[in-house]
Length: 391
Image 1 (cartoon, helix red, strand yellow):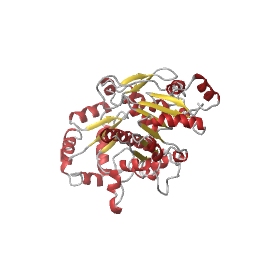
Image 2 (image 1 turned 45 degrees about the vertical axis):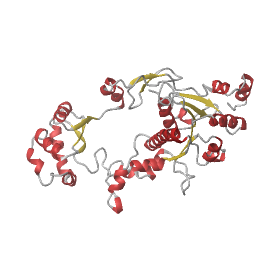
Image 3 (image 1 turned 90 degrees about the horizontal axis):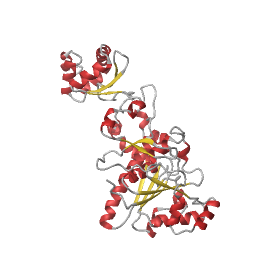
Image 4 (image 1 turned 135 degrees about the vertical axis):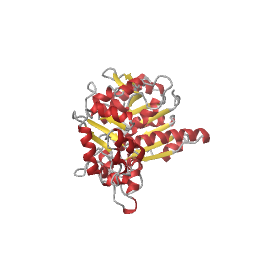
């Protein structure tokens, strides 16, 4: 299923947030023209070399795209970009704060020339506001959004191990563009979308924000355990392996006490009868639960919890995820080409009809000549731009 076939997206993108949004549009069938700097391209290409010499970040968010190199500081490069945008359905950019407006790529100007155009600006903090000109990398935004205040242990905060603020912004850009395409189908008019990493992350902070509403105490940093629900977190089995488990309601708690702890009387104990009670007495209760886990090998503990049933999980390493039996059973693994050869990749979540789109991750400027030819430029004109470092 490629519902966005026929939709053209021009993306002046770098790093993660905008490329993540445009890759999702490409996965759904859109033609995505990724505009990069001549030579080096998107700086995310050089973040690391873990995928057969290619960047792990870049391979992740850039399949199904065409790469066009342009120096938009050169008037000839800007002319080419404007021609592409004038014929596009969607324009995405996540340049440095204010750079798009200074280059003449502001939403008002672009949409004056192409009223059907959907313009999506992605930035760290949005505009206007006192933070609009600040540089914003993922860790900075996690900090500003309060995420670090609830992540880590009591003694030390920790960042989320993935670029969650970039991903959040990319997802809101993606879904907002889909909504804008639907609206344009009714009205014929495009729109301006303005996504900030800060606002996207704060939206995801809803639970702790409301938990600390009106000056209340915030949830404590609880490591891998849940901050306010108990028992909900990691326990070490007798073979040294960690099992993650969660109790969500009093029915589960009673069955857990009876069938796992083999102490049914604990279910109604005044210190443990409700989640609030268990959370208030988690140190004492934790010792009881940990003692029972220590009596069992992890496989037996998981078997008992699953039979109750109580939610549980292995604590997988990344190598385990590549070989996860559930992902394999659902056919989520596929192969995508890259400049360094084919690599494994996973299908877009949700779609189940037909084969997923798995076009290659492009090399820098791989499609430059083809795209410029589409615009009507001659081979000699293209050669001149390439020789001058404009394309």
